[in-house]
Length: 327
Image 1 (cartoon, rainbow, N blue to C red):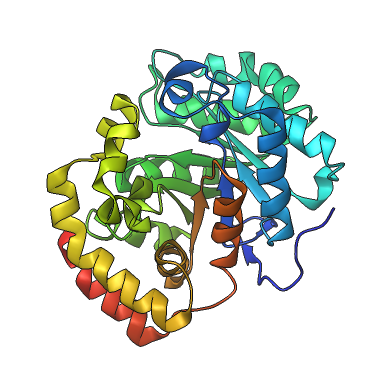
Image 2: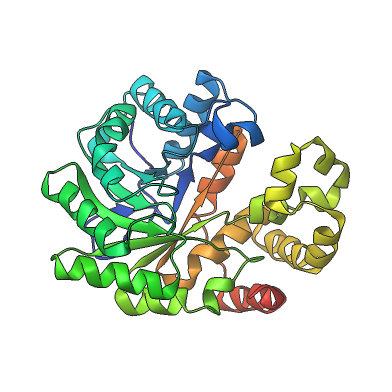
């Protein structure tokens, strides 16, 4: 099973990974385990398989998961789906993350075999530090990650939620070890553009580090469904509502932007979510990738189709203007 060939792949940072601009985020595959599992409905084996199949058929060639997502359940669910679909691992890229909170850098090396077991792979294509809150300094974390590269257990190293200064520090430590920092995964969408004003995007571009945008649809707000049917908010788990700031005030502050998205999407005969994703992957050249989740096959198809058109510069600028308050 191969990805669609009509997608222009991009190089991830200073690596040889050629990825589709949009990847599939696998937080929702946590199978009812952990915080992530509580917030999202439990997807059955068949549902996960169908979402993965639709993603690959649409041109998506990489998947992002994490240890935290059900403490390995998301990794296992993804692996189950890939095996069921007989997907050749050398034709896709799988990224996962180490959870640093209340841990030291020693945990990076001591837990790697568990990650490989859950992913049923001998090598992790992209291994990321999930956040900067380890007990160990960045230098120790980068040395531990570099050791895994040397051992052949990891191909490339990334970080997540690292500030401009912390990203620069990680980049410098890896450079001293002869390795690149290839990515920094950050919250980025039309309703959260802080990386444009806090130095993260500028620093990433300077260092040749790709940005991987998580929550590129503003945790569902940019689909417009909550604006059209506010009653849907009450059907979401309370933790998910808190996580996404799903409330009346948020709907009011994003109403004009969602209206603009609807106008633009109608022009291209696409959905508002597709227009929102297209803005993320195209408004800053080719340095930003997006990982969009899906709990239904139709959502996976919608996400993949966002790569098959390109908003004009005028429309990109229009959406940027309408979302300026969210910088």
